[in-house]
Length: 174
Image 1 (cartoon, rainbow, N blue to C red):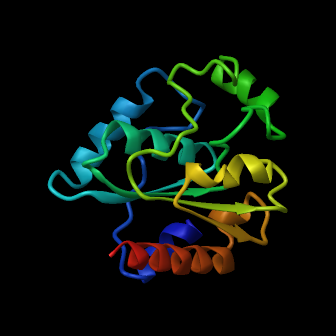
Image 2: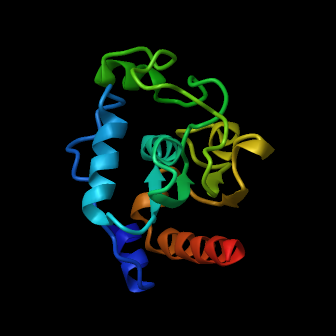
């Protein structure tokens, strides 16, 4: 909520994903997100911000519907390297019902064909920094924060800084 509040305060319209509880990747996850984007903005590309696994989905949405996605911002998202580069992969497998290294949607680490900003933290505690930062060719820009994984979504201070970084990034694309 803090992140959505900070984005709204900065003039962004924010929308929840409205796909229910995120219990891991499903075969229809990206199609459902494409439909959601069509509901939100049928005529203009949108900024997609994803926290943790949501950032992986955001990148795949950017790959699947590049004309609908202005840019992708990932927050502590395990999009790069070995999918076991996090401290919750075993829990993920229990909840999702599939192996973390064999998800029902393609796992592509290459940068999607849209601008990508990766925000990561050395102190994340859940996702390994290398997995959330990515290789130099996997994002257009990577910015290090000094926060925990949960702070990306619930810390007011972190949310304000995320908005600042998004604004800087989008301005650089103009």
